[in-house]
Length: 454
Ligand code: IMP
Image (cartoon, rainbow, N blue to C red; front, side):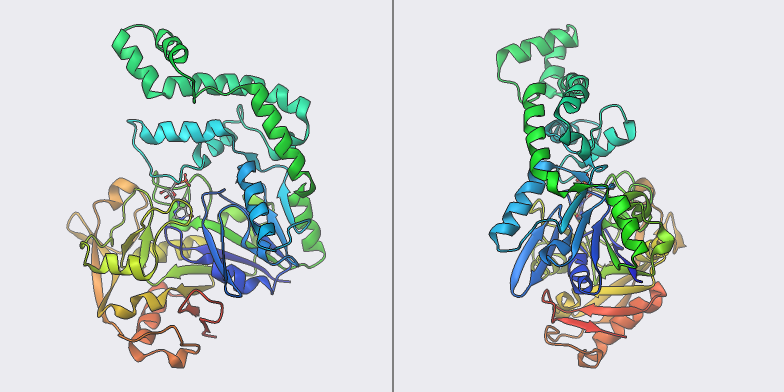
């Protein structure tokens, strides 16, 4: 029995989707256990490109069971949209796709709340705007959260949503810049400002409980064939010795507990999330694959010691262009930089990865000299441990080791021996610094552009 976990070791977008897709045929079930529609998984299959943000990558292979487990936050319109998109592309989606009745629901007021927080004065994170943070906050807060299973009982849903929506309307009003401005302008109570704003214009920050109940009960009905107790399903599968593949969303450095807090996502994107997010105990995992890119990228705000801010003609921009480093979900240009072995050594340890899949090596082909960050200088001292507090990491200066580039196209390499000596040297050096074997090297988006090293 094999239970495999595929986890990103940087700030997300490590091309995990390709590795999950390669491994899917050797498993019976693919599970997503964290995040929501903030993930961007691009899979190229038989010449066709699929971009998924909420559904597990396995869903494009209908003979595999795909599970959205309890740790995921689900925006039902997005779920239905992705299912419809796949069906339109000729991919059958039916009972092969299941969603946990314990996964939490994202409502439009979560999106509004996030938008206001990101515009507010208390510091933006640079989120994807998909309501992820507010929804997980409600889950942990327990008072204002709704689970997917509750969408199937309209009367119960009405009872639950009535106080929640009233509370959210009050919260949104208080967060709204107009309300705050009014309050200041009038020097009066916040309430007087709110009343004036509501009277003056149609209100995008007010949600009607009846409308929401109708809309979300209808989503529940459409999703009904997919909704089940996925924890029980997975335990049943374990009893029958089924092979399960766990697909992390985001990267380990965005993990809410172990990442560069507060510039993180709101879930456990490390292997730690498998247990809480699916109910499958971590000791069932037999193989943990850490996915890394040959360089680093980050989307949104937060410290990034090896970032290349070297202008329009610089290496950072070249990597962005060659690697098509633009967000799958938001289209935002990704920040690009050199490989950071200090950060990845840390995340490899947190996840206890058995092996590494090195992605996008081909993107560095045009670079004549390649840097690897092997330590940081912090307040004049040399350190080789990774500080996860953002304000400390911001003060770290990278210390680099320089390696020669290889200057030739790698996209047709299929064996380690096809790689030029300098590319092999780069792979070996990363493996040495991270103290883990590199077992897969990817030299292009297609399945065939993959080198199995052992
Ligand atoms: P959120 O997950 O939308 O709340 O965003 C929190 C942080 O995580 C932001 O910096 C996002 O850019 C980043 N983030 C979220 N999902 C992804 C992803 O799939 N890839 C890369 N960064 C992500």
